[in-house]
Length: 284
Ligand SMILES: [Mg+2]
Image (tube, rainbow, N blue to C red):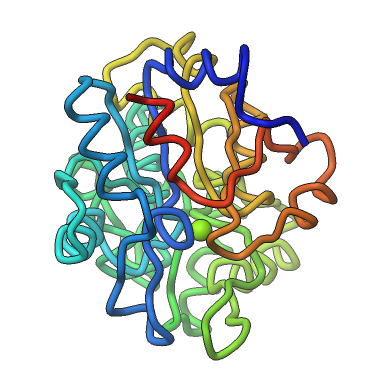
């Protein structure tokens, strides 16, 4: 795996934007995913980017909470993060639907999934709410899922609604072991019933990174000058690669150096770091 020096270091120093993962990259939570603490270098790196005027986004793939709540958690951990600098797959979905003039969306999820769509002025149809003319179904974190929700979403898709999702990751790590990705299970049911594969709007889609870059006020070509930093080859590294960004892996979260080495070309980082420390020097 290449070291972070030479041309690669120059590309990092000259980055126009940075997209961070949250858990395992900037902070670590305890077993209940609370009590987040900043990882070494995180506070300094964000302060440095702000001082240099380099825009950044912190992009977590969870939709249990709205972005402003995650931003509050990070501020509580000591990181200087504004609400609008935090994003979730629902932030991407709000942008994606608006740009396609898709207005009526059945959301299989509660406040955390719905919030950014509602803020964008989109018409939200509740999970099992009777409605005609639904243009898209969007699935996210939704442990309250029931059979009537499945029936309502199937009817929409059979009638032509497009199927979209925040995430299609089967498991995520907790200190209590692996937990089931709610939208993955829901998407599997919907696929079995409708034959449709949900379009992923969160990580690792290139759509998500292009949206993050746009949200920072930069043109699409700035993806090539954006640094993505994360701890998951299947999510951040893959997303960075598919949008042509620079992919930097850290080993402070889920994955070891070996995991990144084994990840395959589509998810291969440009460099693997033991933490954010070296980036503080590089961005200085
Ligand atoms: Mg992570």
